Each structure stands twice: as structure tokens, then as C-alpha cells.
Image (cartoon, rainbow, N blue to C red; front, side, top):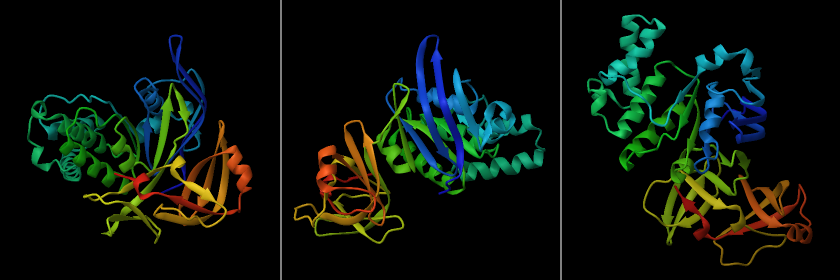
Length: 335
């Protein structure tokens, strides 16, 4: 995943009439990543996506796109980003015609339109639906067609507002496969969602909003795959790491493993416990959060633990400290 900054927001505020719905002192979103913006209804998710696409102007603050102020480079922003609404509108006509309209508007030649539409339908898994009337599509099919229509414009960034709304389980799986494929092709995805499993499975980064403010996430989200099963456990291998996490044995192929920060026990001495996951790591960061402290360990992968100020003092934790960490298999959730 790239670490290039895509969007940088500084002191952003937005209000509808006198009701402030966004207050973001600082937010950086990376290129090449899948970012999921989570939060309850009314938390500001949709407003943030519209501001990123330039559909709304913030009441205060600055936004930079690839290092340039968006106010001065609106054309590049609109050319490279596409915003997909929660309930996308499809034109009358067939699925293929819906994909053709944006290319006609752009002035693309007939032969080129035909090629692009055929390739995009294949990428989106919609070739069999090319001749179907848009009015005869299910909710999940409509979402995928609207997404394919956006793809014909070859965007570098897709901004998706609640793409999982009103679709069934089969459509959700098809959408996840498509979005995962698009991310693998280098398209940056920034999505809002209240669907927990969807967010955990796809997100490289989870940004949580509450009442228009970014609030700290309290979970470790590990990406990887199921390595093996045995002894009543499922063994999950974190991407890029040889170590295995012991998880509850469940049927399925899982790509994400989630662990709450406050389920991690830290100790300066080797831990004798029934917890089946025991690790050792080096402290890389100590961050105070309200009346608690988040300690990040390098265990071959980053592991965050939430502890109290008294525990911080008792363990004499500082960057460079070596600590033991433990957590139960039952504390791990698979998605």
C-alpha cells in the first residue's frame, strides 16, 4: 500500500444553516488505500465524501488534493475522482447503454466506447447483464452497474456513499469481490459504511466519525488469511508475518481478524495465563487518550494495547521497552 498523501484536510468545518456537522482539525487520507469512514447516521460521513469530491464547499479550513489546494485545482479533482451516491440513479435503457452515456458525453469514438464498455462489464462481472433493462435490476445489481458506469471514466479515486445499503448477502459478496479487485488495480477507495463486517474485511484504514469529529478506533485490525485448523483452533496468519494467531475455529475463509485494544494484557515479565496468544514486542509509541494510554508494540506486526496511567507507571513503559503481550483466542473476531 502506498503512503502517498492523497487528501489532507486542515481545520475543516461545515454546517447546515447553524448546525455544525463536521469539525475536523486534521485528517490525512492516503493514495492507493481502502479507507472506510464509519459512524452512526448523522455523524457526517456523507458530508465528508461530498466535500472531498468538491460537491460541497467547507465553511472553513483548507483541503489539499495530491499536495495542491482543491480550490485552485478543481478540474483535476473532478477529472480524477468520482462520487457514487447511496441510491445511484440509472438512466432508462440497458446496462450497456448506461455505461456508454458518460463516454458519449466525453466525446469518445464509437469504436472506443464499445471496447471500454465491454472491458468494464467484464471487470465488474456484468457481461451477462449488458443487454438487460436498468429498470429490471435488483438493488445489488444497480449498485454494481452504477460503479461500472463510474469506472468507464477511469477514475483514480472512487468515493462511495454507503455502497452496501439495501443489498442482499449475495450482492454484498459480489460487491466486495469487485471492490477488492479495483483496489488491487491501484484505484483509491474511500467509502462510508455502517456495515461492520464489510468495513473490517475491506478497510486498510478505518476512520470513525461521531457528531462530525474523528474519534479513536479501539480495535486492532489484522489483514491476512487462514493458515490452518487444528486442536480446536483456527490459525490466522497476518499478511507479511510468519507468526500465527490462535482464533476460535469457524467455517469460512476469512481475510481480517479484529482484536479490541483493551483485550491485550501487557507485562514486563513472561505471562503465565490461559490466554493462547502470547507474544513479545518492542514499544514503538505511547499515546495518551483521555484518561487512558495506548501502547503500540512491534511484534513483527503492530499491536496496540489500551492500559491505564497507573499501569504505564508501574511497568515503566517507554519507547524501546520490551514487553510481553497476551490475549485470549476468544477475543479475536474473524471477518
